[in-house]
Length: 262
Image (cartoon, rainbow, N blue to C red; front, side, top):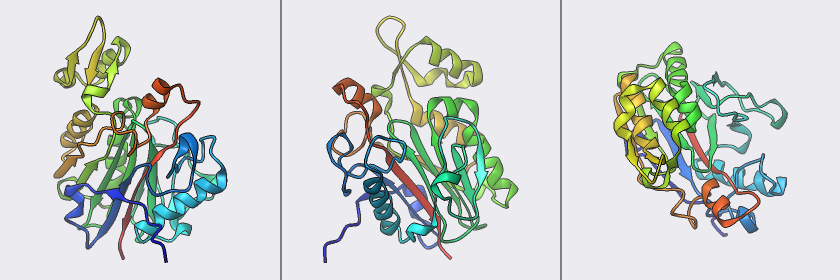
């Protein structure tokens, strides 16, 4: 029988608690989609065939040992909103938010990204997990803080919490204009050293270190960020910026999942 489980990466900070939690950062390999969506496109909001997206999401669930019927994934809106999940969501009832928190073992939290930063968190001692979609707007707006605050409300201890920032744009790939830089520095003046100069008014922003910095300021005890860069690894990850440069009409979405083990 052919193994249809797609490959995924793990964050060392969380992998050390593998007796308590499963997680994975998935890319574009191991799915059934074609064309610009080849092959593990997990984005229902893309222009891909719905049945293929459903099969790809099923494969992600099975790769992490979860039932496809136990997937909780939000309708992402680049917000700072976090929602507590205690059950799976039907397609027409997905909450509009960019972070999910759960205490329920066996419930797989899933978020999508295609250059933005996917973040997973877990307090294995108190049995709380979270998944975050952190684009720069959400990160600046406070989505990381919203998720951690909600984790604390249901019993997590930040000092016992581990976090992993998954594949996203690396600093050398994230060229930004003054509007983004101004928004970041207005909200978080400490982030000034996360910009490198470019040509004219352009700069290069380190989204990974920015997310780690906000996690550290919340007292999160263990964290790391994967080195993978979505823009420069087009055979491994979907990238919105890469698709725009290539003139593609759309792109797929990478899925990240985390689940507490009973």
